[in-house]
Image 1 (cartoon, rainbow, N blue to C red):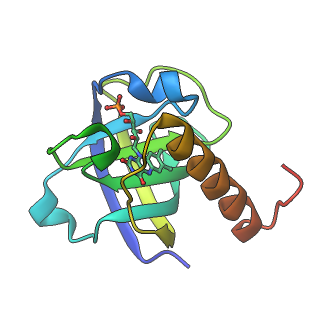
Image 2 (image 1 turned 135 degrees about the vertical axis):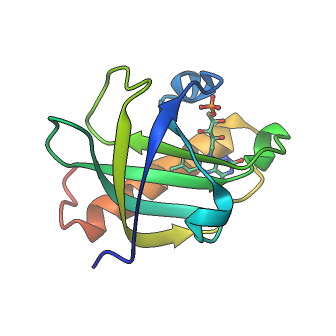
Length: 128
Ligand SMILES: Cc1cc2nc3c(=O)[nH]c(=O)nc-3n(C[C@H](O)[C@H](O)[C@H](O)COP(=O)(O)O)c2cc1C
C-alpha cells in the first residue's frame, strides 16, 4: 500500500499547528530529493524506539497563512510530545487531497477534521 518512503529530522515550526488543535512535527527536507507532489497524505511514521503511528501529512506552502516556504508537516494521530531533533521515518500510504487556501482558520480546521475522518475510514477505523 506504501508508495513513498523517506526520512527527515524534525525542526522547529511556527507553533501554529498547536493553536489549530492539530500540532505538527515539521521535517527538514530536500524538496528535490523528495519527489512528492504537493498535497495532503495519510502515512505511517516511526522513530528510534517508537511503535508505528498513523499521521496526516501536509506537503505544501500553507497558502492560508500566506507562507511561501515549502514545508512538510506531520500531525501524528494519538501522539503528543516533542520530537524536535528526532529522525522520523515516513511511509506514505494514500493521497487525500490537494492543498487549498482557506478563508480562515475555522475552515482549515474543519477540513483537517474531515481529513482525519477520511484517514480513519481508510485505516478501517470509522468509530473514532
Ligand atoms: C492534515 C493537514 C492538512 C493541511 N492542509 C492545509 C491546507 O489545505 N492549506 C493550508 O494552507 N494549510 C494546510 N495545513 C497546514 C497548516 O496550515 C499548518 O499545519 C499550520 O499552519 C502550522 O504550521 P507551523 O507548524 O509552521 O506552525 C495542513 C496541515 C495538516 C496537518
